[in-house]
Image (spheres, one colour):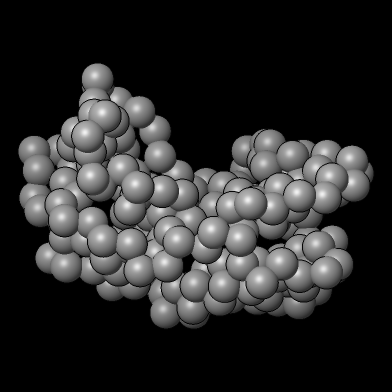
Length: 178
C-alpha cells in the first residue's frame, strides 16, 4: 500500500534496521520497519528523517509492515536548523507517540501535523505563544475542548512523563537563538 506519512520517531533495531513511527494520511499512526536504513550506502535514510513528509510503500512483514521505496516530499530544513522549532516539533511527536493508538485515521490530526510542521518551517516569532495556541488546537482535535490548559492536560493524556516538555522549557529558558 502506498501512503504519505510524517516521520515522528525512529529507533534502532538489529544491526542495520530501524523502527519508524509515523503518522500516515490513510492509516493514522503506524509503526513499521525500515530494513537496511543504517547501512552506509542506504538511500532511504535521508528520506526517512524525522519530521519529513514522505511517500512510501508498506508491504506486509512477519511482525510488522516494512517500508520500501521512500521518497521525501517536504524536508522542513528551516525547522531542523532552529532549536526552538525542534523543541516544539519534538513535543508534539512525543505526544502523538504516547497518546495515539495504531491505525486510527483522523483527517484533522493529519492536517494539524502537516500545518504545524509547515508553520514551524517559517519560524514563528513568539515560540511560547505559538506552542500554547497549538496545544489548545491539539486538545480540541482530540476532543478535550478549549478549557484545557496546555501542559497539564497535554502531559496527563499520555499518562507518562513527557520529557519533551521539559526540553521545550529548557530551550525557551535558555533563550537560545539558532
